[in-house]
Figure 1: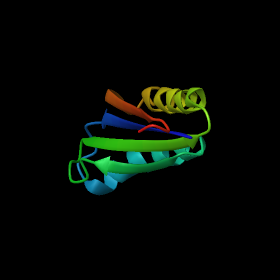
Figure 2: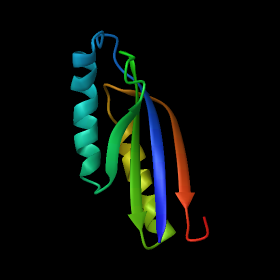
Figure 3: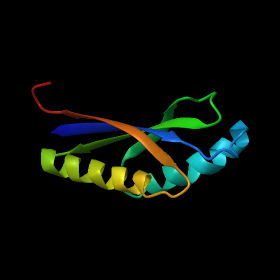
Length: 97
């Protein structure tokens, strides 16, 4: 069994000056990521209007599949024209961890 996590640090558009506007950008990304059958949540920068950290976690029988799913998630976030992907932190955990 392998688990993998990825945390995406994203910059939101300048017009997200309230938490309500921030949610209007983050919520569709979270919904789109769920299509990959991952656990996903906004985990950081909760009080910041222009930034967000979105994390995903996946569990699979093979490390390659975990990497493939995380790659797909990263492509989705990076491909969103309304967001700027600033950084990605990924971790893979195996049976020995």
